[in-house]
Every structure is written in C-alpha cells, then in structure tokens.
Length: 257
Image (spheres, rainbow, N blue to C red):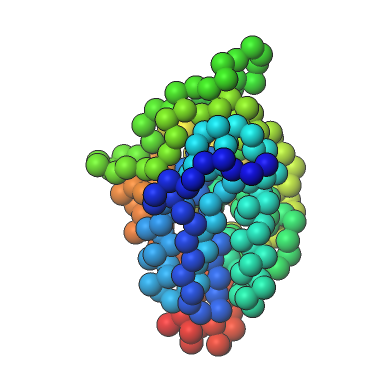
C-alpha cells in the first residue's frame, strides 16, 4: 500500500550522524517523529547516531493509516534497524508508547541489539477496549495528547481509524508471550500517572523480560507522551547513563565522552 498523502510539515523522519553507537527511536500510535525529536536531538548532542523513522501511515492522513497493518509499522521500524546495522552501528532501540511495543518485538527477534529503552510501552489501552466489539464506527475523534506540560503541541491526527486501532490491539496482544525472548539490557521507563496506558504495563514488562541487566524508572511529572513532557530531560539523562553502561568497549566510551 502506497501512501496517498504528503507528509505533514514537521512530521518527517530524522537522522543525525554521530559515533558508532546508533539509537533507533520510535514514536507512538497516531504520532510522528516530531514527538520524539527532543530526545533525538538531545542524544545526538551527546555524540550518538540517532535515527527516528516515520512509521507507515503516520504523519500524512488518517486515511493512509486506515489501510496499514501492524506489520507495516513493524516493517518501517525494522528497516531503520537494518539501516543502522548496514552502517556498522552498534544499535540501541528506544520507543515511546507503541514505539516501545515495537521495541520489545524487535528485541525478541534480533539478538544483535545492544540494549532497549521503553517509555510507557503499550500492552493495554483500557479506554479503547470497547472497539474490539462490532459494530463500531469507522473513525473516532482523537482528544488532546496526554501531556501534563502546558503549551505543548504534538503533530497528530484529529481522527483515529478504528481499523488501525484494532491493528494496534492485535500487536499488543502478541507481545506478552514474546517478553521471555527479550534478553538485551533494558531500561523500562513509566510515568507515575498515565491516562492512556496503565503504568502497570511497564511493571509487567520489567517483570517478564529475561534481561539480566534491567532497570525500572518512574517519571514523577509527566503523563503518557513523556517524550514531550516535563521529564523529557530526565529521560535523556537515564538513557545516556544506560547506554554508557552497556556500550562496553573502550573505543565506544572514548567516542561517547
């Protein structure tokens, strides 16, 4: 399926060339790379290479998204991973919301990942459960993004296709059984208050992944879209320390510092 609409201004994928540590960074459902741009720019400023792909059907028009499957989104993400590996990068994978869900799926299938960072990764979205039933409307209205900080604008759609929501639900259902296959070092970040994805999702992920090295962090002053919220600098600090810790070669340390 080809996208019919142009990419919205500001919603484009981005890439920053840096050292040999590559960070694959994913936005969430209905979002765009704009929602993780602060994280990407901040991590690039630390010296890392950062790639944030635009997941298929996102950042154009909701009619494009309606035709996508969750495998389309995963393929967009995998292409980013392959691109970083093709450039010889040691890859860490990081995702917000559905991006965290895709991160877990990728880490369950690829052993070459150096570490993962999830931010409010989605396994359940209670307020959308009713849409599993039929009949349902074709679209539902999207409310304001769940962000505690004032005057923050996220590029997103004003409508969500129910078919796309059901694809997201299928993706979320698939992940719990894959968690034991996640063995890479993991930094699991959750907001103390999240009105979209219950914080218990991240606690569950932390418990059931097989990673020997894992850390659970709670953000005190952010809601669901934490990558754009009050604790975004805290995310960067934790992510940077996590990557330093697990980029074990002397050369990597020298380049990062």
